Length: 270
Image (cartoon, rainbow, N blue to C red):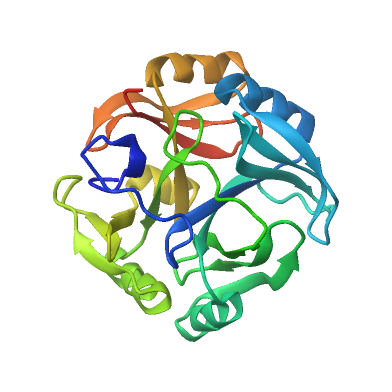
């Protein structure tokens, strides 16, 4: 986050192009109760939903819209396997196949794809060497950039992982990110930077996360009132995992939706 909050403007940052290779460009959520998920996020963030055709990966799915602009995809898996509900962040690529091949060569794993998804583009879902899942996406030429950096939309991503410096090197070799120490956020924080500045952060797993999630990417969603939204999460059937508090990124809270998918709320001041 640091100076890379884009148009949130918390530290006078520049706005990163949404499709520059290596930048976060999309988020999706895998769920088992799509109707309940729509009700939760519709009430929490004001999202509306547009049904989408079924694909080889998803049965019923929807696009989440914020003020008419695409903000995320939510879908129910075709398989009967009880996969955990989780947000997945996608990093932009001009060549998904070549990027997926670099993931393999650098010790990661390709779990899905590369494949073409109608109205989305070409994508792959992969794991880095520490086991953190993320996506690679070349946005369809007819698609529009996802809305970001406004209340109710993603504004930042952070990787919690084992051996942050070693893991950051993986992203450097795959996407060209330049790892830099982020002393403003803490001694165990790194920023993944491209030409225009930071696009993501990496930090060491603390004890609690080591016992629960393991290495993972976390999506931060902007809000104008973290405390009020954390209370709203509980009223809507979710949970507060870490109460609102003032941190290096401003006022934040860790929460989970009713299906167990974890996300961060961060106050933008808007």
